[in-house]
Amino acid sequence: MKKYDVMFDHDAEDDLFDIYAFVAMNDSVERADRLFAALRRTCLKLRRLPLRGKIPTELFEIGVTEFRELKYKPYRVIYSLESTTVYVHCVLDGRRDIQTILQERLLR
Image (cartoon, rainbow, N blue to C red; front, side, top):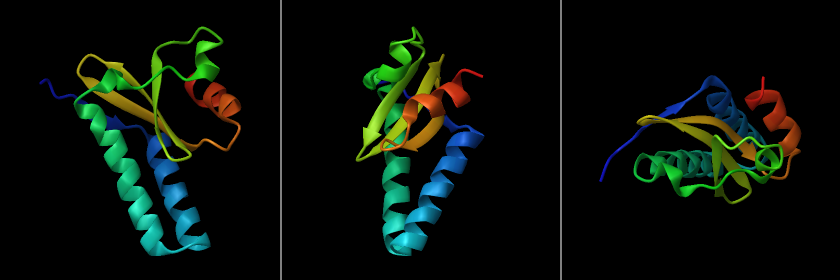
């Protein structure tokens, strides 16, 4: 089975850091560590089957189909595939206004 590279852009790295910091401050460092590791594992699963995710509804509705998403609990990992590389663009809490965030970040 073909393996793909998984790259995190700066926004996705910032998202992971922000999620970690929020959980560490509002819950515990141990839970933040576990969540960070789980989110990272979710992203790295894209090495094997990068097309497993679906097109985010918010983007599909406006005709944007080059991005896909995986979910982990309330979090949504938004990514794209170019050749043999998966680019993770966002790791977002699904309880937020995702449509506005995606339009600001992915459609600039």
